[in-house]
Image (cartoon, rainbow, N blue to C red; front, top):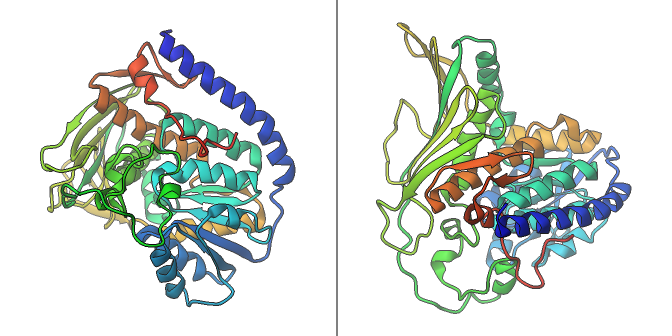
Length: 426
């Protein structure tokens, strides 16, 4: 083990020991008692956060009672969208939300680098959590969050909503029944047209925005508009590129359909063939995850406005007897010599929200469709794919010890340095 790997491991082990002591306290105070009506808060109010506010507020047995964002303009917009009731709390600081003992659950729909820190704070406060994808900004955050979720007794749902979609569930069951024979390859495809972000000049943050809080665990950096709303996805300090943004949906479906967990090896290449701007993350990426008897391949092109393999973003499973395609427009199979046939429907976000609220009400985290065990596995694949792309070589993953065997440079990217005052709550 290299010195870097040893330091990373010991640091993580120390964090885990500290977390274990604290989590035992969390578990004592976080019993998953059933409730009749759920009082919910949404933290982070970009496009997906607005959708969370609408979806949760539309349920007959759930009330959105609090909204939180560092941007007062987004806060006011989301408040107006769900009726603008005077009983809805509006906060800039998520801690104020978590201090409210009357709130049962929270959505975390912030930039990626805040997902795990807020989730840990929320579990510590005894809240149920719906955390958007990816659930972590780096590999070791996922490990800590998985342990926290298990120990808390709370419902922690992930934003990989395909897990709750009846059509995708039917397609995975169809695969498991052997209709394609042995499936040796799944290709997770993320292809779409994303515009450039340009070269942005440093300027003052918008009026009323708490930019330092938005930066949070990330290094101090000047404000530019192309690292701000949504564009943060393309900066490694805050996002995970499109592999962790949209690609995680396809990776999760592919891993689910193959029936696999963590890979034994990862190889990748990627870069910028399209952008010439302040992007840090790739616009083109190819990743291969190796398992004992199958491969999972991820293909990403962010400069294609046309459909490939008969659908938009989706997954193709290749078996002895034909192929199965899962996409947003539905699931289709083509057996050898046969015609392309529709099997079932596509993605359904409301179903994932409904499953979460049902589990919160009943106090049954074991019935979540997208629990942390699956969430962390799929997020980890995305992180490892990005790491293999960045270091430019094949990685050997030791799932038991959560480390890349003999690769200090890669292991350094399994975690991050947390800015003083914004460390993980352990």
